Length: 410
Image (cartoon, rainbow, N blue to C red):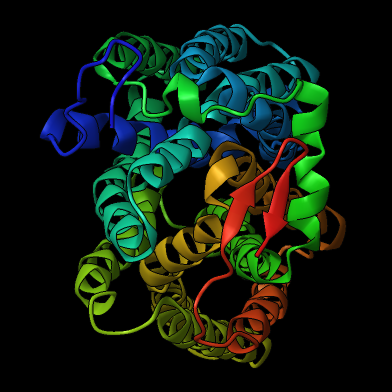
């Protein structure tokens, strides 16, 4: 594939993979790194710090729906450059905040730029690779990007010991600056001749067509429901582990990192599984296992048996399935609509990460000071994920052709 300069990009090189992995990691890094500081922030700012995650996810979800059509029309690199600048400004705003209202505002602003990272990384993979190979590449990216949710809470937990939570957001601004500079080594994967030629208004019409595509939406909703459950843990676990079970903030990161080890392990396994099994078969198995693990978690918490050990074990199994589920569902969904991968990736991301809004709001409304609220939310939506995963067939994907108004099935 040629860039706009007529040169073949080094799309298989280590630098290319590392940059895309960094872009994919922006979401987890932006949320996970300050999780150990949330109880401290709640005391200092005298507000509900779950709203900082809610605000971020609102901005993250909505902004993707704008960036998607823009990237299909103007290419991938320009939105990424603008997005990184917005992320840097938003991170600095968070660091300078002195009230819960201020930091929620800047978290939304931060998300306007952060969302371009994972959204366009997925689109660039689909620009270059098709179904099975795309799933392999996404598994590779997830394996590397998993460093962020492991390192994030550990770094944040140590920083809160020796500094304030403000320093964590200054660190995010610095990371954003490094990523901005790295984009100048990233090739453009969507050449001019393959870009959407319709107006942006016409491009937005593609979302209606995507919502009507049953196969695309089944894969997307399967992943969306999984992430509602995942964000219930991400948002609720600091208070469950630190406040309810008395885990020290600097040790919380190790418990969180345990889950990411599971994701990394299954990502490695998935690279080999996709060569032997269909994406639908793998998706059914992963979604089913995640549902069973979340149900066991809810039962154990309700019966008040097993304590923190059972919670950690069942959550580990649940999160490990993400190593298969995220790659297979995303690759299969994007393979349904290859000519508008930017818009499709934006819709996937908007629903995937916007789903965390549901988790954080439910936790805010129904929290009873115990792990039960987190547990039943995870179980409810993990079962929904399992149902969507089991509904599919293993048939060949529908072929899509580009039209002047959107996409047509054939």
